[in-house]
Image 1: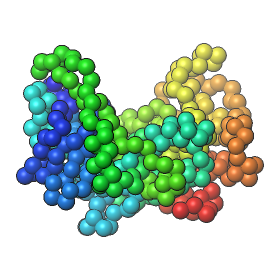
Image 2 (image 1 turned 180 degrees about the vertical axis):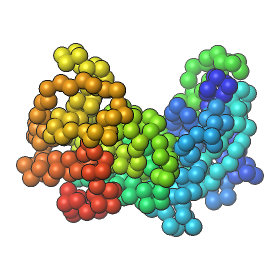
Image 3 (image 1 turned 180 degrees about the horizontal axis):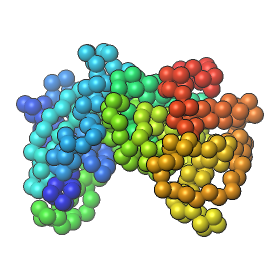
Image 4 (image 1 turned 90 degrees about the horizontal axis):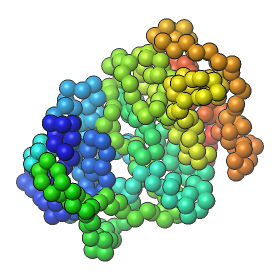
Length: 378
């Protein structure tokens, strides 16, 4: 699929040498998304393993003109020296532009440390193996994410796309252990398929093995993928975030700021600790509410029936006003019967702080770091 049609994923081959002076050797495809693919590579100067995120040819040609700019965000987060960075925000090690294969166009490539995977993968694996994601591990991971958000906000960066698969964790695997894993797990390809450039066999995504639970409790979690980030100084009302994590002011079409990250963070707190999604983006047949009206209705019910401010509603065409239902966080958490009453109360109170309908009433990330829910967690 060519760049001119809105695509243009990188088509690296295992063993390709890329970057300035061919300083990186591509070894494995780790994953891909709508605007990029990520590859395991070796830094030929240091022999360490890194991740290379290659933006699609189409996105590479557009991103400089867009209101969010990932490389710019990286530079804001890096500060004067790399040592100024937070350990809970992804680091940019290198960047370069290279020509792609065939119709793929040019690729803007971002080089970052190699991580062990993302939090959504970890949640799925640990739920499968242990029946539930450990609540104490959830607190540790979420505390690290919140530190990353606080640091990003202090640098003038709004992430706008906080979700579990944008949180990474480090790997305890040594270089020699990764060497052995690569030897035992050669690159795999999909069956041949026809493309604009002829018959292709693309690589299968192969992530590093999931880290053991004990290592996760000692690990560091990192806020990553700043591909949708925006500068805090930019006043905007464009649509951001996936529907399930989208703040109410964004749905209403109002101008928004860094507090959208606090709302999204609250939704992933519930998702990781409780093990289910807080909201569903779907039509409500009973009340005849469309997807957006229904999710706003549920937001009001969950947050205690507080009204939106007039300034928020004035910019929205939504007029449905169904009868509210009292459905508290305590009920949603307590029905799972895995936390004590005290823990349920602390978590519910924390969620209410994050999920205030009015962004002016939401605490900052820095203020949330002092919440009692995180007591005893590092």
